[in-house]
Image (cartoon, rainbow, N blue to C red; front, side):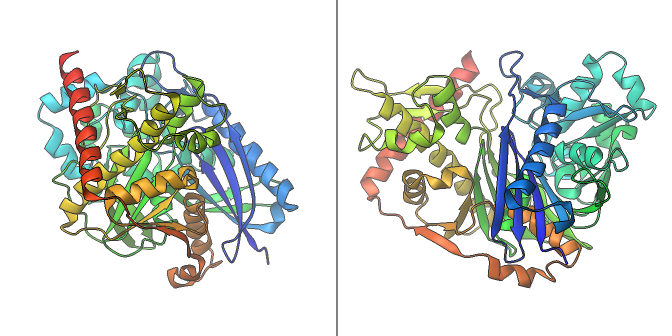
Length: 498
């Protein structure tokens, strides 16, 4: 019997492929960055064909690195950047335009119109989401309005909409399967998280033809088969989940009250809330965590739009570092932020502010401020934004979280992890396997085909590598929090008056 699961982890800046053994140990990893396209300020696009090719390339590369072939892979799990919107021709399999990325803000004005029309509560009650350009619905509408003939083609059933998982699934199955899972569907602002179906009222509000939409399935089942990794070797694609839900599952946060935070391009915190949706009073999102067999579980989520992306900006925009990994050494050149605060609202502020017009700013600069102070303020901004989300989450849940499980690339930065624990006043636990997004997709795929028998079988796979405990004194913490609050208020004021 084949002994390996392949996870395809399609992210915002790169495509990755990871092969997992049955013990959940990593056999091999391959990664490939792809082009970020910025046609106008606050617009962000990807080339859908480049996404597909980069993901296919990494799948072949990881097999080569592992010394394996397609016949050694028992199943494939897909996890993906969510909300990013692709429309393609059902017959030619070609996108009709660039993908509109989740970070893109071009539809912010339209979303404000929906709010002014009094639709916020209706949409939140159906979808668990706040009205924002972040989600797929307004992006679909923009494409249908701006690509000539696309609306008519959509009505005829000639076009397909998909988030990135659906696009990859379609390409892997050579156009045989147009489907998605509940976690990705729940991020479109078109899916009713109670009835578990595309919602006709929402489709009417956004004027989106139902013929565009993929079939919605569970997160752990056989979606279809692919021979893209080797002719004659049909591998089942048997697990799909949006990246943050996959990470929640990979962290084995399977009980109500368990919380994880992923530090990637953005920062995404999810709390498992059980089999009934909990609606936030503090501007968090209610989302579907997973569906296995007939069991649907839900989560509260707080989204920080710019986390690791701020390090990329320091590298590519300012040239302060040549490689992202240099950031920790630069921040350690100073003992503190020197009074400098960085609000990286390049694409607006996410939870719990949801300010679409906010833009990035650096405060507190003096002649004594250095590149190290700016770098430290940038890293600290990731922690402050995470703190804001957890504070809101604690209020909604009615409890104070004692442990935060963390994953993502930035967890390699010990300074960041320690500062995060200091601000939150709780344990920050880093697992031995930090590739929890891909691991979650692998778990979902493996469960569908009996590679792992049950969720209980998965529990032996998770262990902590390091735990960070808070050690900051109360006065210092209070001063830091006051500085951050002042910086956030200044950014909000600027957005209201600009």
